[in-house]
Structure formats: structure tokens, C-alpha cells
Image (cartoon, rainbow, N blue to C red; front, side, top):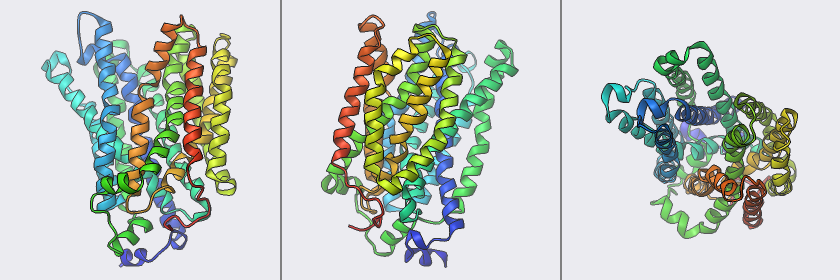
Length: 440
């Protein structure tokens, strides 16, 4: 009897216990997603090359290993379209149970894979296949997780609720690093290559079971329940989205660019640049990134709440202008070869500035689309933006360093150009703070 009742409810009428359960459920997907991201990326650089892609040249093995890592970015837009279609037609809840099951199941299966030494060519084939399944699931997870938070949120607190799934990503990043750090310290080098690397993958079963338990206890969101009750489901959501909401899709892609470019600059490129080119200890850089990720969580919640008072566009614009100004000084601070300057640069850039626009991005996107195509619209824009700049950002930055003899200024200019594009894009977005989410 709960479903009919929900169908006539607005988010403001949902009881607090149900709302908080939905909020936690939305965050757990982000935790699993980025736990997997950091874990796979770390193992791709440490053990996947020799264990799954062995060649006579270690550099070739490493390249093949990282190529399997990059495949997830290629298929994420496809997963976004596929699962968002189901989410807009069948419902957010069922889709999210499916994406979490696929994503988590693939991660656990990786921990059970035989190596190249045991099964030959089947080892890299199986690993790559699981990575592709992860990419498809990841493509559908973010949009549904975000909507679970935003579509249950009271209208006066949508910014805060929309920031929560993003903090789940930071928590997953920290957990993945912690799992990798603990296992490497507990095992010898040979023990780690044999069994130690598998343990963090197998431990993800805990996150998956908790996530599935919570998600199965959450009903369908008020927005989708209303669409279902009124028989307003889009027949083919992607077609309707591109026909009637193409401007919002372009705005979403453009606004996503600076967020994804700077995230992968701070969380990925900085590690290789600072520890390789600049000579910092890798553990020092990793710890700085992890500290910044943890500090970013309360900052994101504050910025999300601030957007409920002054508007999403203002908070977003302040952050983008700040990163435009800080892009070159960020790399200058790293070049000082000071651990204090390293920590300060990453905390300012990642914890404060990135968190400013990263916190409001999801809510801004969700408020740009009608309920019948909202899952499709935000997933399409988000995943295309991530594929265009997110995956290639570290590669672009590295290529610029090589082309300009390790001069960091062109890398800073690249970030500044992306910031300008995103600022122009969001200028065309509608400000819908305090407005009924499902009003015209």
C-alpha cells in the first residue's frame, strides 16, 4: 500500500526516515564506484601488467594494463544511455539495484581471476571483460544515485542532498587507498603479487551487500512515482531528450568539463607529475591527495547547503573563477619542492575549489530536466563530459609537459581554457533553487 501513497506525495511530504535511507543509498553507490576506480587504477600500475599482460618489455605490459583501465571511460556513455533508459521507463530503484550488482560483482570477480601464468590469454580477456562490465554499470550508477538523493530531497535542501552522492565518491577514493596501503604493508612483495592484491577486491563484497540491503528498503522516488501514476513515461527517453532537451544536454556536458578535468588532474596526474617529474616521494603525494579528499567531504556539504541559500549557479561560478585564477599558481606551488607547499596546493585546489563546483553539479543537472527524461538527460551529459575530458585529462597534461620541456604553464592554461568553456555553458542554465523540482 506504500506505493500508491508515495505516488501522490511530494518530496516535502516524505517522512525523514525514508528520506535519510534514500540519501544513504545514493551515497553507497559513489563509495563502491570510486573504491573500484582507485583500486583498479592502483593495481593496474603495480601488478596487473606482469600478472595479466606479461611481455618482454615491462613498459608495454604497463601500457596494456592502463589501456584496460581506460576502457571503462569508453563504455560509460553507453552504460549511461542503456541504464538511464531503464531508469526513466521502469524506475530508479530497480536500475540502481542492477548497476550496483553488476559493478560490485565484477569487482569481486576480479579478485578471483586466474593469472596469465595459469590460463594464458584468457587472463587478460577475462580481466578486460570485467572492466567493460564495470564501465557499463558505472555509466548508469551516478545518474540514478544522484536522483535517489535529489528526488527525495525537500525543495529547500536539494543542494545539500545533491552533494551527498559526490561525497560518497571521495569516501570511496579514501577507502580504496586505505585498502591498498594496508595490504601492501601486510604482505611481502611476493606475497602481495600472489594473494595480497586480491584481498581489497574481495572486501568490496561488504560494501555491495550493505548497498543492496539499503537499496532494497527504499521505495521508488516521488518524481518517478508521479510519472508512473500519470502514465507520462517517455517511450524512448534518449530520443525525447535529444529532441526537446538538447540545450540542457549541451549545458550539462559543458558544465561537467571543468569538474572532471580538475578531478583527474588532482587525483591522478598530480601523483605521477609530483612523484616523477618533481621528485617527491610517491607516498607523500598519495597521502596529500587522500588528506585533501577527506577534507573535501565537509566542504562539499557546506557548499551544497550554501547553494540552497544563494543559488547553484553562483556557487558554481565562484568555484570555476577560482580555479581559473589558481590553475598556474597550483603548479608553481608544487614546483617549490616543499611538502608544505604540496599539501597546501592540493588542499586549496582539491578540497576547497574543486569541492565548490563539484558539490552543486549534480543538483544543477537534475533541475535542468523534466522527470520523465531526467535520468537520461543527466547521465548523457555527465558521461559524455567525463569521456571527452575526464579520461584524457592526465594524458593531455602529460603531453603538454613533454611538448614544452616540463614547463607547467601550458598545463595551467589548458585548465583555464576548460574553465572558460564551463563558465560559458553554465551561464545558459536556469537557476531553479527553491522551485518545485517537477514544475515546468
